[in-house]
Image (cartoon, rainbow, N blue to C red):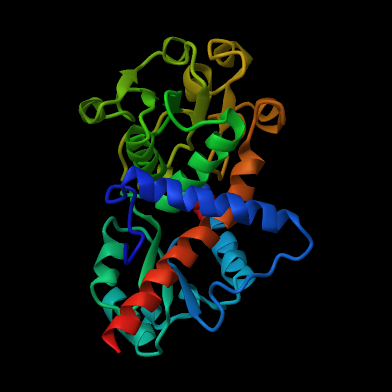
Length: 311
Ligand code: CP
C-alpha cells in the first residue's frame, strides 16, 4: 500500500504483517534503548484538525523513536484560520517535501482527498465517522496478545456505533480476521444497516454480551450528533453503561477495551476501567505507539522503493 487510509483496502496478510512488526516494536519500546532508524532522515508532518491526546502523541513518539524529523502543525495557529482551504494547506506542506503526512480531520474522506494531492505517504489518524485504521490495528494487537489469537473470537462493540470511526474500522478488521462481531446499543445509535455488514445487532446489553470474549466500549460522540437525539447520561448508563452486572454476562475471561477518551459513569464504570485483570485500556495506549511505528516503517519502505524506481 502507498497510504494507510482505512482498514477496508487491507488484506488479512497485510494486517498480520503490520501486527507482527508492531510486536517487535513492543519489545523495543519496553527496553532502555528505544531508538531505531527505519525513518532516519525522513520528515513526518502531523496535521490534526481535531483534538487528540493518544493518537497525536503516539504518532509523534513513534516517528521520533524511528529517527524521523517530526513536525506537529499547530492547526489553531495556521492560516486555515485565515480561510486557507484544506487542499491549499496540503499543497503548501507538500512543497516542503515531507515523506509522511498524518492527518486527522472532522470530515469523512479528508485523508483520501489529501492523498491524491501530495507526493508522500498519508496516514489517516481519524476522518469524521469514516475510519480510524491505526486504532483498529492497535486494538487488534491488544486482543491478539491478550487472547493469544485474532480469529474465532466473539467481540461485542457497545454504545454509539453510528458516529464512531473506531467501530467501523474495528468491524472491518475483525470480520477480515474471521471473528464474530456483535453491535450493542439503542436503535438510534446502531443503524440496522450495520447488520447487513455481517454484524449481529442487539438492543439489550445483557443479551448481546452473553459469552463475549472481548467487550469494547465506546464514548457517546455528542460532537457528531448534529442536534439529533442525545440520550440523558443517567438513563444511558443504566441501560448501556458497563457495570458489574452487565459484564457478568460476558465470558469469565473477557477483556474490556475502550479507545478513549473515556467518560466514566456514562459508558463505563470507573472501577471496571481501572481493573488491570480485566481492563486492557492502558495496553491499548501502549500498543498504539508500536502499531504506528510499524505502519510508518512499512509505508516508508514502499515510498523509498517507488522513489528508487522513478529515479
Ligand atoms: N482513541 C483516540 O483516537 O484518542 P484521541 O482522540 O485522544 O487521539
